[in-house]
Structures are given as C-alpha cells and as structure tokens.
Length: 304
Figure 1 (cartoon, rainbow, N blue to C red):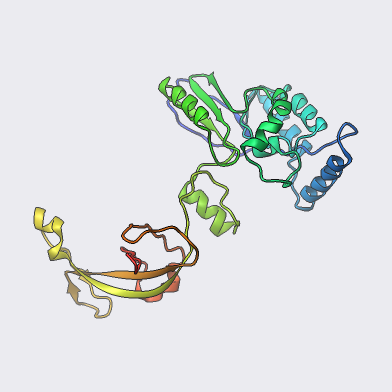
Figure 2: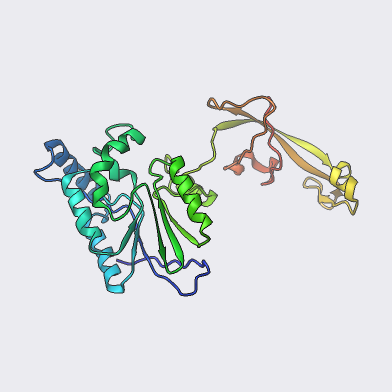
C-alpha cells in the first residue's frame, strides 16, 4: 500500500498524523444470511474484481496494518461494508476493534441489498438498529478531541444532513477548536465538480451542495457596445477611461468594451420566472468560436 501524504495547517501546537481510509466495501455473507444475500455477495465480488478494485478485505487489512505499525489513528469516511449482512457486520467489528478508528457512515452501511430500492431516511432507520453496534461511534453524529483538533463525523449519506445534526455541528463550532470534518459525500467545489463531470465523465458529480443545473442550448450571440464613459462607477469616481484594442482593426483602440448578449433556450423544465437573474457557466466556450474570444461578461436570457 502506498499512501498519499497530505499536510493540513490548522494552527495546533504539535503535529498530528491520521490515516484516512474510505470505501473499503467488505463483501461477505454466510449461512446466517439468505440465499439471495449470498448470491449478492458473489455478484458484488465478481463485479469489483472485474474492475481491478483491490479495496475489499486485502486493501483494508493493508491499511490497518500500516496504521498499527505507525501508531496512527484511522479516520474512515464510510462504506466500510458493501451491504448489510451478518458476516459483514461481524467483519466490521473485528476490523474496527483492531485499530483506533473514528468513523463517518456511508450509504452502504445501511444498504440491505445494493440498488434494490430508493434509499432514504426511512430505509436507513430500518437498518440502523442492526448496524449501529458494529461501529465505534454514533453513526449519525460524533465528535472527538485529538491533540487540540475537533474531529467531527456527520452523517450525510444521501447528500443531506438532518436539522438535528446541523444543530450539533453548530455547537461544536462554538467550542472554538479547529475542526476536521468527516463526511462520506464530499462537499461541492468547482474543482471537484469539473474533475467528476469533465475529466472522469461521470453521470453524476456525487457531491453535496451542487448548484442547481439546467441544461440549455445557445440560440444567438450578439455583440453589444458597452460605453465605459457612461459607467456609473466612472461618473461617480472619475479617473482615466481604459481603452481596449479593436480585435478587427489592429492598432486601433476604443473606450468601448465589447460585451456579448447570449440568448439561451433551456432544454428541460427549470422553474425560472421572467425577470429573475441567473448565473450561467459556459463549459465549452470554444463552440462559440472567435465571436466571444474567451470573454463572456454577460449572459441574458431572451425572456428576461
């Protein structure tokens, strides 16, 4: 196992070391489980092996051996088990008791059969009494102070956090310690979003807090002359008026900045109202060609 080393500066007096592990997906079922559950285990192992994922028992054992040798606490951010079975929960107890582990739940901790049904709060509540005793801390919310850092694990398994956990999190913030937050579903950032959608070509970003998206097609692009001398900021503060090169006439300059009015038609229902402002990100600017030359300062929908 080759760990990735990441340094985070939070202002504590002495450095701390943790081993972060996630998505181990233990896959096992035995005679205590139904035939259907044992068949699910066979299918899931076969699927993981086909894709070359060495993240089941061997990968977890290697990670925990590494943590024990270096005397490092483990931070596990969920999906330790692939689905709920007697043998998986037994393995979870055995593995987690062998290390100092702080745990944040993943959605698979509550999955009775992977992909069998809509997994929601009611689904989770049905599994929770059986699952919870196998894990070292409360699966809904847990906090633990380590070397001046507040480790906080919050259940956001379906991309949501209950109000109860949010209030408990606010109480931890009020204590004033630096917080290391453990979540199964990563929080949205533009960089993570682009990594998932544009680089990995994933169907879903699988991030919490993604802005609402409404696919649209561009119907028209019109150049607009924005006269800087009429700008309210310049009228109020005065000062020199910038000039801009004329892209069509080299060597000529103007105090008029070229903006572009882009007319869009949404390709699915979005619930937008006339007059409401929207923010639009053009992901494939090259499709607009030289008409906008990588500069889009204003996006206005025809109906607005």
